[in-house]
Image (cartoon, rainbow, N blue to C red; front, side, top):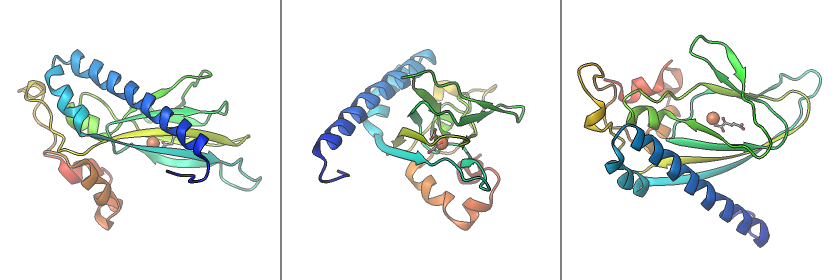
Length: 196
Ligand SMILES: O=C(O)CCC(=O)C(=O)O
Ligand SMILES: [Fe+2]
């Protein structure tokens, strides 16, 4: 595990990742329960794989744009984020406006990704978000939960009022798709990849 010669740091990160994974499982369990479909939770947990990313955003120079990460939706199921004391994460509302995310000290932000939207048959929204770095340097740590098995909406979440929106979804395959020419060009990669 990186960095290979700093065992203490590796252990800390590993411990952090395990705890965040527990939080991820709790959050997905609560959502599954809230939709009355907790019977699918164990199988979901068995299919999750995690990817941990540490980011350093340096403060922009005078003539530089202050954008840190371009607007995007996360492609995974759930993202759990923490940052140092420097804000910068912004989320787009459905009316198109951007709002800063308030990160009180030691708090976490839990964000739904496209795989969660597919699983919930569109009930859970995966928001567009971006990072804008202004004054000081910013650090963040994000753990992304991806699904290894095909993601399908439970039949309980599909009915006449909520027709099925997506075909069974290959989460890791979707990552491949968004890096193709077709995936890069399309306005709505999720719809292009598995929309009905
Ligand atoms: O650094 C952050 O706060 C968010 C980064 C992000 O949105 C991402 O890596 O997907
Ligand atoms: Fe993101």
